[in-house]
Length: 180
Image (tube, rainbow, N blue to C red; front, side):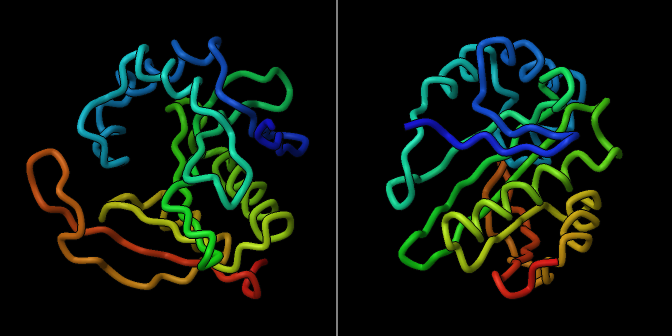
């Protein structure tokens, strides 16, 4: 079994590969705020990225989480990552997250990548609810959520403990019948 490859004319979602490791790790040094925005304690080292390559794909409902490379469809160059996590298949619910390298931002790539995975989740997997979260101040996620029709559900006060402190988390959701 292999992860589905999802793509359109501009964006490709494909499994992470060894050739992505350097660009993946460099993205966190190129943008020191990225790890904080993602809620991770530290920027991933190359060995951690390589460990992610080894995580096998499992078909839903066995799938617990997965991370695709977001690549340029023209030259297959790594430009970010899109993750499924907090999969609750019995409830037909999954959470998605994503990030882009600094040069890829502001070009509609994240919106397109998210649209590709939403189409797959709703059409092929029959998910009924997709959740998206971000820390306050992550305006890019709020804009993308609005573009794709996600409903803002509110602030989960001090939901997570990150980098030695409690943080609020903003929550959006999209239901199968609300897709644009």
